[in-house]
Length: 113
Image 1 (cartoon, helix red, strand yellow):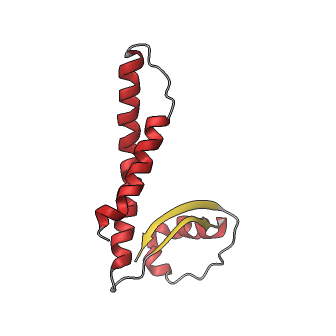
Image 2: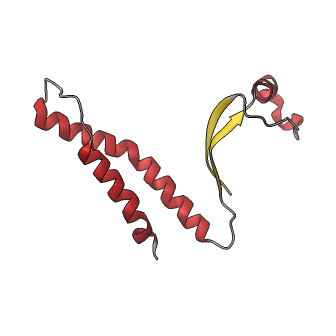
């Protein structure tokens, strides 16, 4: 199955979600134009997710890459502090061996090859 066929359901779900979404009416544009503007604006915001999914799928098909995605990667306060405190001379500080735990801020790791 080629990439366009793989991505068609993702794009169709995005379009269906936008078509059924309720938007606030902008009093300047009125109901018709504010809805159209909101749909277009929301579609642009979702472009990134669709492109990310397409890149992930294409790279996953390659025999040369192992692809990893982590939508809920945790960065501990110890790791945050270590990087911020040593940022100027980070290359001199590597490698760092810090524990990974479930506490801390979350980052979305889009793709690692």
